[in-house]
Length: 224
Ligand SMILES: [Zn+2]
Image (tube, rainbow, N blue to C red; front, side):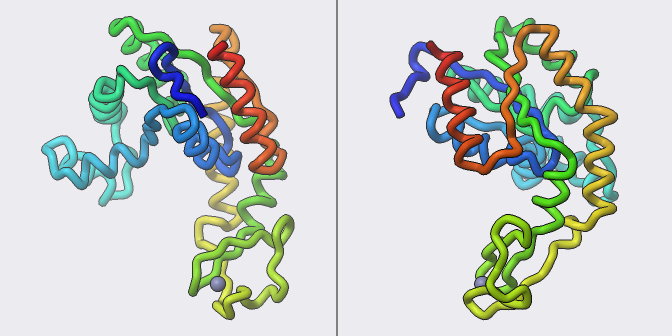
């Protein structure tokens, strides 16, 4: 794909339920449109690894299994956005609620930066359950299967002979908890960005390739 960053900068917010494929699609967008991707959880971990004083504070929250306070999240994000500001950005995992979205608006506004769009990867809860609960991973080679969409020939083992297992986080209770948090806190952002005229909705219940094509044509339309 042509490098368009010279005359148009993409500044995206990505929204979607867990299991919507947001992370995968953000990789595709980042690569093809030459735009840095800022994954909130990754930024916090990086800060911890750098061992800065801010990183030490974050580490202490993480070690206690607590949520990192917004004030600290904002500092990390602010620093990272300003580092890539000339290249645009793709925000993944932020904002998660209305308060954070309002903070982002104010921060961008005070730096005369405008969002290009908020892309919502729309997928229903049942599809999310199938995708996540159906996941089986090979102990030896790491290959991921899905018992509904991409089943192994033998449900007990991978083609390589390795044992298959389900990740602890892929159980019903944990998925449900994440879905509930999304519904209670993040779903309202869809309406929020719609009101601002920034929302682009993608049907994310389709397969990865189709979603990728839809996403790319939506973004290309933004650029033209
Ligand atoms: Zn294997």
